[in-house]
Image (cartoon, rainbow, N blue to C red; front, side, top):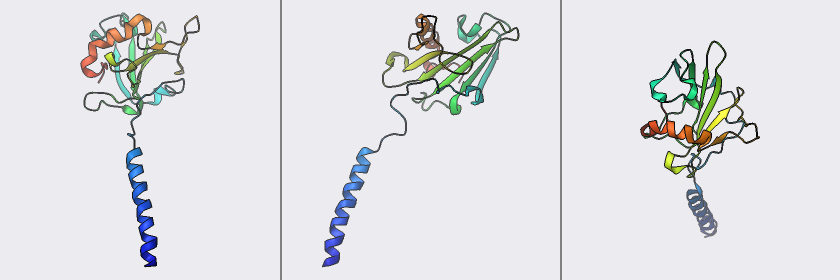
Length: 171
């Protein structure tokens, strides 16, 4: 009888804990990822997805020094991230380094899948202009160079050409 008195309350506690644990389990994928100056750190050590030389017809504009026949564009994906069912998960980070041997081009840009309806019409990507060390650049007025419509919407309008591939041209 004493064993039943002890086991019954223990079973009740165990059942309650199991129920609450199941109810509080969350996905390992974040609902929103807000990039900061540490997000792009050491990007050049990330997996190199692609290297393009000269003008790239996919760019459709002069973005990323596409008007320079000597330019090289290296694209890095943090953790080598791939799309899952055609969409990149929240927290995906991409950096593109455009440069040329003359040293007249040396630009760093990034994009992050932010999530949480940041820009739902364009799959929640946020665009960045970066410094060579991966920190987010500021303009002459001190404004941080980031956003859904960065550069007057140039980023999102160009990447819209790859909307069928979740706004990523290289994969």
